Image (tube, rainbow, N blue to C red):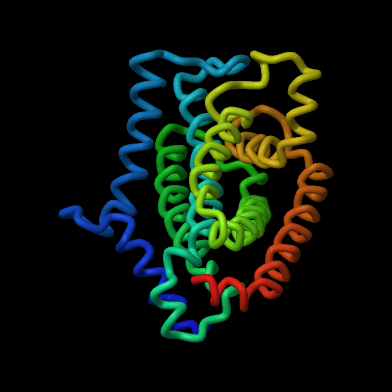
Length: 256
């Protein structure tokens, strides 16, 4: 896939996401603004939600946003990648694109959306008087790890979805369960340490989201040992997904 074609797919992905709306791609900027407004004003001011151990008015709001932004990128990448071959079957029937390379445009689109939202979030943090911590420099690595994991899983499900269309519905349910097993809305203090340790072991998004929390809030340092293990897992999953698609490429094209 050429860079020009990759950018064309990426731009079309962003356009299609808001197709039919009056403001179109402007929602890439407006949606994060509304999200920040809801979390900061509704949870921080109206509901007066507070983060345990932190007296700041915006503590819980920052906690929510810090976990929600990367989660949305992860979930959207997994969801969109899992249906990409079926969604793009019209293009695949006319152009000889490499199937393993096709989902890259989804990752790129989510990176753009995440960067826009993150930039707005940083502006809010600065205006609210929160210091930019040194751990912030780890964001590119952590984000790359979570996106590799999402892409690898998505590629595996994308092949299965060609033959078993129930996969689309399964992914929706999986993402919902996965979301509530990850400390984004709830905090670790509401469950037992033993249960949280178990979740940290079986759910790779727990240490990842915890790392994001530690980048913005005084809640400890990222667990680099766990993040390293998840990085290895992400590489393995992505590698398996790539070779699985390559192995099944002819069958996928024939079935489509």
